[in-house]
Length: 240
Image: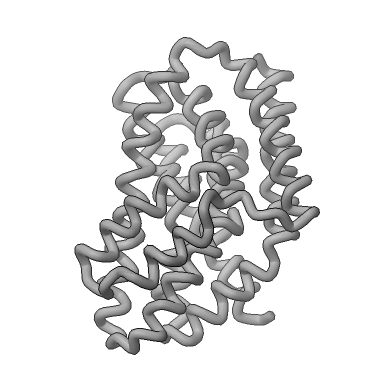
């Protein structure tokens, strides 16, 4: 229990520090609470930890070296980051025609959905068995992990599309350069928990243990993520 709390604390502190400095520098200090709520509701989503746990278990079974674990792990994380960034660009293009108040309704609806499915402990991952098969069938190489990360990104869509669409609507009304920067920052926070677990927690067995414990807390994490989305939705409706 101590290690998973340490991991969550590290994720929260690093997320707050990185986002606060970046948004303040961009003149978006007023957006820090909303940004954190959206990004963290996505990054602490249990679906991500389920997939990541599968990868760590697969690596432990294949008995690869610690150096190879870091290479494979970072290749996997990089693939998810790039895939989600490109997806975000597409969502922003789509969101430019959507009124901002719609983001509030979507946030509340998806937040309630996340809380209900989390409370009932229902999986929101598309084709979990297929994802497991692909993870265990891939070679523990840089290219194999990167390819897997791209494929897995689409498996996570049912979990993360709601938060990401709300975020895309909110930032679509800013300048083009700002959109690129805000998407980069959001996705950094999205993959931050995976990086923390990989590097901060030490060896493969400890990282796997922490990831599994976070999965076991999926009910609490889902409720927290959903509540954050509902709060964002209310804020958007009141502001816009």
